[in-house]
Image (cartoon, rainbow over all chains, first blue to last red; front, side, top):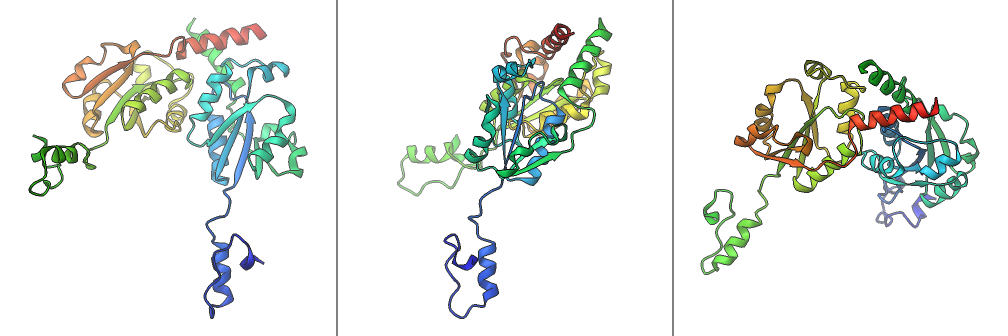
Length: 166
Length: 166
């Protein structure tokens, strides 16, 4: 019953056809912007991260990014080269990103989806299937990764470049 | 003589005080935005690059960044880990950057200043004095670098981190 929605603009004047009223409601400016959430460490912020953010922003109005803290990474047995404060600043300065916050534990994703009103959690395809338990709350999308670019591969390239000059 | 400048708005009506006229001229909306140019390779785009861009944007309305091509770096005996296409894309995606273009030779800076209507060339203080010959054309500013962060230092940290896990 879109014409009686509290969000709809005032009804068309008496005599206006149904099509006219429906058209007004479909185009109402109060429709919420779509929100996507993504998660990661984003060590050595690189073109793969950037292309993922860019593709997400082509599909959703707002992109909110959770960046793993150093303490959370330590729990997972991971250690980034770049410390948390610098990693989150790099992500926040990307023009495709609307908001950033810290990822501090495994169990927060359900809360994050509700807090940020997320329509989707979007991850690179290297995470395929790993976020499927969130499908009860929102869409879960895995986008193809940029071939040949990851923080691990970039670190190997740095080591090779430094060695070739030694 | 600000009240007679061709850019000034029409003179205040007869009887208005001098203070009133001066106030109009200072606040004129037709003033051009200030433009800063900076140059670099921006290999492994990092927090030092970001903080430099941020500080430049605090001083100037527009920031235009020239990114060295791989061929130009080869002439200087330098080789970046990240190829030109990815480096310029990373810089262009930074929210403090308004425009990017390629730096392909030593002699282009004078042309760039004129083409982009630059008020200043702004570089990190590691370049202190090296751009002073441009002072005939525009302001030349050297801003303090972020301590302990450079592409070279970051590469050394990557090597140390990879070795510690080997």
